[in-house]
Image (cartoon, rainbow over all chains, first blue to last red):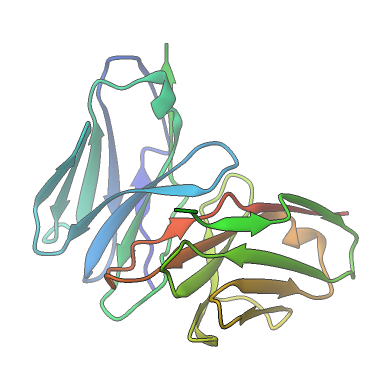
Length: 111
Length: 113
């Protein structure tokens, strides 16, 4: 099974700035999901993008997917202190049912 | 609409003991997955239950076992605890549509001394 590798490992920005984090994976996927985790708590599903989609929006979130480069990016616009969390991508292989996570990107938004 | 619930919130055990963690899925969900998350790491898949059967398993030893009940709730059992089993244990549920979007509970923090 494959897992996503998030980059950078850590990111610190000021409130109001945009935050971009990237995910790379190795094999063909059915979909790719992004999750957020506040310190020591459960994960929250943010967005799912299918392999035949190139871009998806949800509120202040924008996700892109480039299957030719096997990469995805998550953009958070106009960040807030409440966006401080770890962000994980989970590429889902065709036929698999479990999510496989990398180590995540730790985002710190300074007020 | 209740989300995924887990109990207990925290647990302290000693090496060699056994532990049982519990999970109730989100209303309408029939599939439960368990994950182990060590400090500073991403969650690692343990196994998934559907229709009371273990449907898929990650790279975890047989000391880790589980069960799913007719009401879709689930238990995770860990025998012969090791120090390295100290982690946050996350339960996630999913259902229709079958796109594998999972809803996570708050987790159980297990400390093995």
